[in-house]
Amino acid sequence: MKLVIQRVTNAQVEVNNEIVGKIGKGFLVLFGAGKGDTKEQADFLSEKLCNLRVFEDENDKMNLSIKDINGELLIVSQFTLYADCRKGNRPSFVNAMLPEEANEIYEYFIEKCRKMINKVEKGKFGAHMKVSLANDGPVTIILEK
Figure 1 (cartoon, helix red, strand yellow):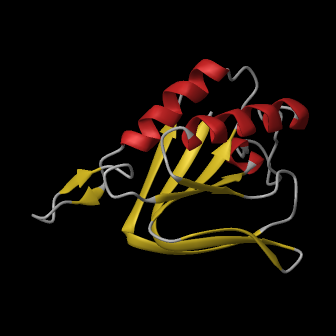
Figure 2 (cartoon, rainbow, N blue to C red):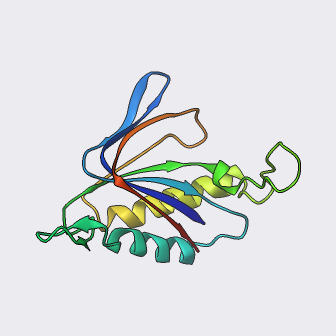
């Protein structure tokens, strides 16, 4: 399982010119599931994500979590995080989880986050999405399990 986490002042995702998810200050999370990923890994990464201390405190130190600032999450599925580009020029996605299983673990991950964060929005699994964001910092962190 791979997460690309971007600290944002705002972000949104559109499908067919319709906004399906929109947040203010918080994290835009690109979520990828790989073959063999488990709910236990999703549990670990959801806890890590929601407790990751990358927001500034009163001394301008990255010391606060998204929970501490009452921030928001926008979680977008992205199987291309499992692109293997080692051979040739066309990426291989053989390490990505099959769509049916990936959607199940994606929804599970979102539900785990909703137990910790007040506002959790999402993209539309399997759709062609347009993601807009204002990266704050910039701060971008990659988590894998």
